[in-house]
Amino acid sequence: MAIKLKRSYRFAIRSAALITIVALLFMAVILFIFHFLDWRILLSFTVVLFIISFFILQIRIERFIYRRIKKIYDDVALLESSTLTSDPITTDMKTLTAEIEKFAKDKKIEIDTLKIREEYRKDFLGNVSHELKTPLFTVQGFIETLLDGAIDDKKVREKYLQRANKGVDRLIYIVKDLDLITKLEAGELAVETVDFDIIELIGNVFDLLEMKAAKKKIALVFDMDYQEPIRVLADREKIQQVLTNLLVNSIKYGNENGTTEVSVENLIQNKVIVRVTDNGEGIDTQYLPRLFERFYRIDRSGSRKEGGSGLGLAIVKHIIEAHGEKIYVESVSGVGSEFSFTLEKATVSNEEEELLTFD
Image (cartoon, rainbow, N blue to C red; front, side, top):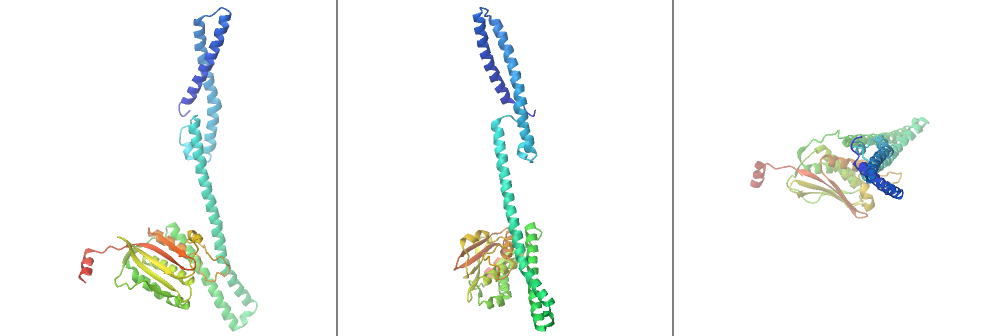
């Protein structure tokens, strides 16, 4: 045995004592009736009976209880429970019950986690299938039409090939985003921190998306005129992608003649917060907790009229978290949405500070 079975000894001693007392009283009555009462005989009988009872009870306890409890430990050990297998075996039922309850709770948590992962896996595979199916079937349809004879008509051929090309571009776009988010989740894409002006970067993204915004007559503006640069420490390329994804979303779901406003504010001494605010459709509160999930869309229609891979916000979240920062969302249906994220502010050297003060 791994340890002395103290509680079983106590049980055996008490039981043996009880048996001895009862037997002693019975023996005393018998001897008294037959007028043969001798205290030396009774004392010897008591000692012998107690010892015999104790050993018989202890052996039975070890055989009947300990072995069965050990079997429970062995059975549980097959499930690789570090809690039960690492501790000495004990016949203390209170301790055993507590360990079994803890084991059951741990296993329930594991099972619940596995169920959540299984549901997530099914949902993810279903979403990937749905996202890839539409452009694949579109490309297949155009190619089959061309093979059926439409290829001989120059105008039809060019039109269908252009549409097929758009379908292939969408497939490439989805695959690239999937590859990126997989690498981000696996930690394979390192964050290369540099010192740069976030105001300048936002202006560059405005320029890149100017034509896209103009098609929906949406104005991309700052909340104010920033005279001085605001320098931050982050991965410039990845933060540009974050801003691009957020602004593209605001354009997609914004109202015509609307506005998307970007602001940069000091949050605390070494942090700034970047806010992207629009006056578009807005999002119901019930959808906000799942907004950053891969492929999660509020619009479940099959048309997917706004396009996109459905990974934009998930990528944004992973990039910001890779920087050790936070992203937030606030939205009111029919009023608009605000996405905001924090960045570390670049420290200004003493020489630069004196130069700025002099200027």
